[in-house]
Image (cartoon, rainbow, N blue to C red):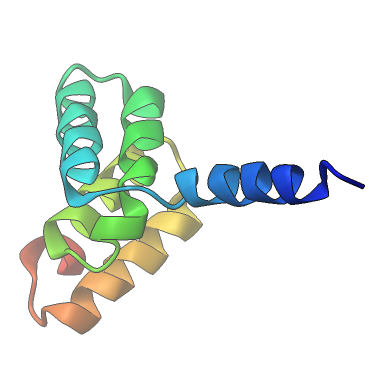
Length: 98
């Protein structure tokens, strides 16, 4: 019983670290994903780009690039959802319409 507040504090600290994604780390993961996409390492690119999603979720460039990687991975249903998001954010986007 004496250790209960200690465990509560540890638990709270651990939970906050899961939500500590900053724009800098999101940019790092997105740029690394772009580099891996250029090297045709699509699964690694997809994994890194998805780590940037909490911060870059409504960014047109992010959504477009993730959708293109999803197309390469044959995740067509997910790519369609992201292309539709791009279309709703920017009408007449040539990549989303293509």
